[in-house]
Length: 353
Ligand SMILES: Nc1ncnc2c1ncn2[C@@H]1O[C@H](COP(=O)(O)OP(=O)(O)OP(=O)(O)O)[C@@H](O)[C@H]1O
Ligand SMILES: [Mg+2]
Image 1 (cartoon, protein in one colour):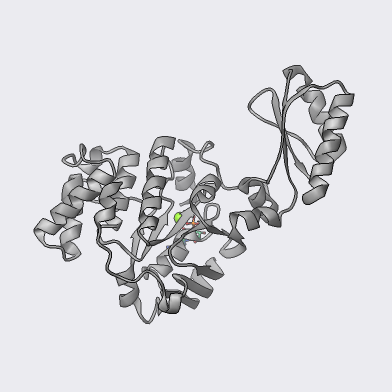
Image 2 (cartoon, rainbow, N blue to C red):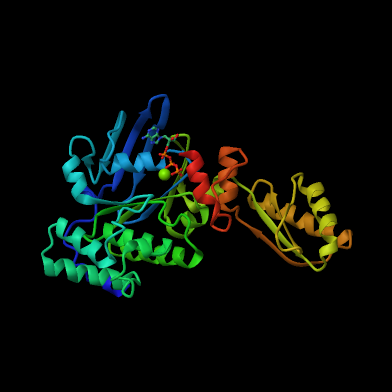
């Protein structure tokens, strides 16, 4: 990633007076009867990764497109580094870059050709465009594939060239709309590294994702949106604390005792215990946080011992973002974790479209 360090930043990375990178109030977008974005208030601090988390159709892409001046809001206001997206659209356009949910590079061109062409369009001279393209291809692990047509790239390579294209000129604000959807774990990690490197350069990143673990890994603050509105906002810690309680994780000595253990847990805690894929493990939510959770966990252990159930490993942790999302939306369909994703995602998209 060292080549990214040679970008030579010249512009300011904060709003006027150190203000936020993005500020919206009551932002609205309707498509016919659909209120895709229904009054969104967001404040995104400069120089951080901000996660916008929500299920299919929540309004993530629509919000990003309005902020990137690709779509006109029907109501409310949005400012990027203090500039109104509607009345100062040109200024905003000069500060932002967008990597869309669907790759935007030209399939028939090679990696190098794509980046050089876009570099020239951005006003770089021939030599500068070639140099910058070479740096980015190297930094993104695409040097070997540089001379191949993009249509022959794998999904992960496609996503990386797409992000490379969006940071040819290091933007003040980079929108990444579901940058890792459908990628394997290794490619996801590569994209995460790229995001970290871009932010280390001072760029603010607004990242939309359906993956709770991605938001957990990258974002300093997270807005959870559902049906076009923000239903929760804060740091990961704040979001987790807001639902209270925690989770007990147990690993038993013997798999045959798991059913009985689940029964004991339900009895003590009054909630259903979840059986993990590991046949020895089970998990359950505990009460209202703080001492309450610890006390309940203690009672669980005592009861299990009384029933002759041997516990090899025990932990009391914060709720996961999955649990936070479920608690917030109070429904059974949370955004997917990366482990659940892979092949099903494309079909799901098509069904939604
Ligand atoms: N151009 C459009 N015309 C009509 N309806 C649209 C249009 N774009 C988005 N919508 C609708 O607006 C709502 C929000 O869509 P949006 O694409 O913003 O969701 P999203 O959060 O990005 O979802 P996903 O995770 O599937 O990408 C959906 O109900 C969608 O069908
Ligand atoms: Mg989208």
